[in-house]
Image 1 (cartoon, rainbow, N blue to C red):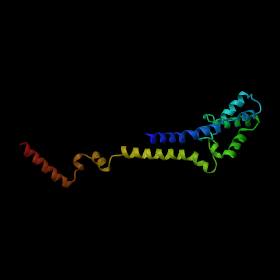
Image 2 (cartoon, rainbow, N blue to C red; image 1 turned 90 degrees about the vertical axis):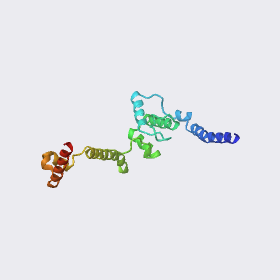
Image 3 (tube, rainbow, N blue to C red; image 1 turned 90 degrees about the horizontal axis):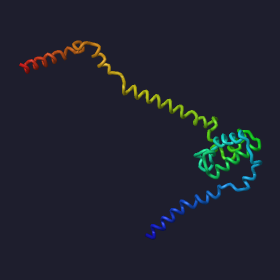
Image 4 (cartoon, rainbow, N blue to C red; image 1 turned 180 degrees about the vertical axis):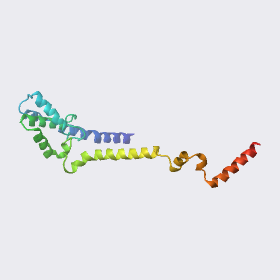
Length: 181
């Protein structure tokens, strides 16, 4: 029992303590908030900040945009975007600054240059290949009737029978007549 309890406490400590320490590291300080020149933003600037925050990934996990994520790092990204807007930088300059610091991974939408073309081309290629496989499968399964079946339906039943089969059919007819009588 004591061994089970110590294992449980150890597992909880390993799982919870790092998250608590990370959460404390990512809370923006008061000095950071004071560093933003001016506190009032126009409606257009506020909308622009929201648009740019949607174009940047949260650096904590890179699974949500900075606008969607609630982490301290996402908050820092939003505040840096706000600072850039208030200092008069263009959208491209702000995005370029973030990609210089964090790399292109920070961008929610990869630039269509070099190897990044694959991110734009592969979904289209996969869709075309999938459609071709689907059409091929449907054609194969619903398919056309075999050639022998086509010729049998086009001709009358007597003409479709070979001469060697005629003797066999006559024999069957005789046996049926004998059976009925």
